[in-house]
Length: 199
Image 1 (tube, rainbow, N blue to C red):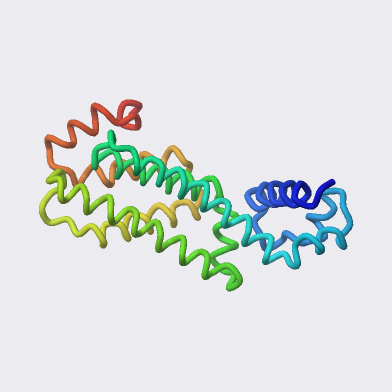
Image 2 (image 1 turned 120 degrees about the vertical axis):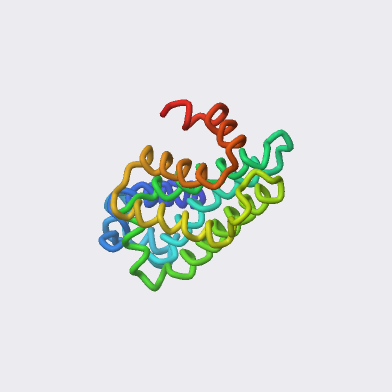
């Protein structure tokens, strides 16, 4: 097997194991066993577990970042749609990773810098979307976009750690954001956005 093919398979396998079991109990021994290869071969491709996990975390983030940025480039989306799509992508990311993995990462200094960068990215994205909505005149006047972004992301992240379901979190995100819109724009949200059509 070519080294690049082996690397790809190892990364994909490790990502699955991280989601299922977190990182604290994941070892290079277990990864090698799961892949049916020797530890020596594994270490030739990845010098350490920390290196491998960081690559996996970077891929988790890049997939969602690219999805969000692709949407932002499309001119047909309104400021309201951009805001709610941003929340959808963030919510799907933390629930794809799951409470087990996020709990492990939160307490591990090897991954704290990556987690902080990811938090900063999503805070900026949500604050930018809220500021755009405020500039468009669809939010109530006293909204502080930066503070609101921090409050909402904190609530969603902590609820995910406690095991809240994706559907519950998504509805919560929509409900929280909906409360800061002017009455006419709440009607638009209720009519046009998929989550509110379902409940």
